[in-house]
Length: 278
Image (cartoon, rainbow, N blue to C red; front, side):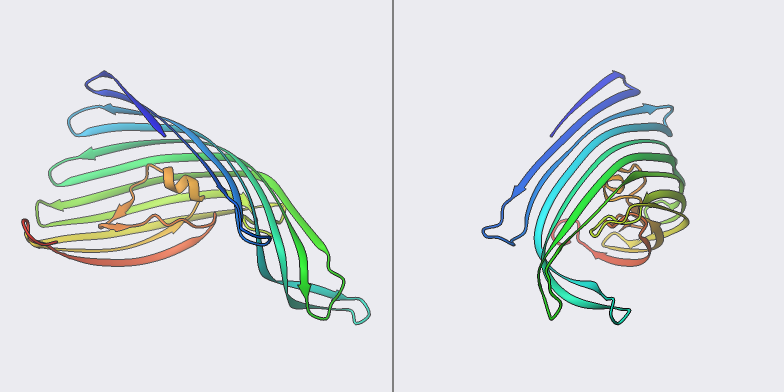
């Protein structure tokens, strides 16, 4: 991983960042988990100080990800019996092979305003990704229903998303911060991201409120509480997003599958002494 920063003036800064991760895991015997993963990204960011209280940021990213895995798994499969005109589910053991490839482009902009009693963070983000997924399941063992077979599945499509957000923080200096936020997200995604894959796409939209409160009644005690909702766009996009990570001192970023909706309530109490205890 490497990064290069260049300042054209005291108010203008460019940052170029690139990271590459190659990971290979080989099982010691047939059926053990193994993987071959190649993940790489290039990001270009720009930071402009408009005034003492106002900053503008923008970031563009291109990434390519590929993953090949194999693992022996337990899976329920559906078996059809034509003579009875019925289908039923039975347990099975088999070797599962998956291959996934994603090309991803994203662009995000953000405005940050700070003052003695009020902070504001607002922005918009967009993403477009081309995806291809293939999977197969080699059936090894099943009770009372021969013969053993191999099933295959695949999907290809485009993932796109757009988000607009606003966070306001009302401050009582050194005593309290109340955060009120909202984001509106729309996504177009693949129907499945784990095998067996289903070709096709679906869409979702959600307006998510955010509430956070940080209280510091004394120099040694801090209380934190937050409630927030969310709609996951993709694991990788959420990791590289410019949208604020914390609401009321509580982390709102959780890796999950695209389209996962969540409601979260969190709280914390920090007791510390400036010199000896935290």
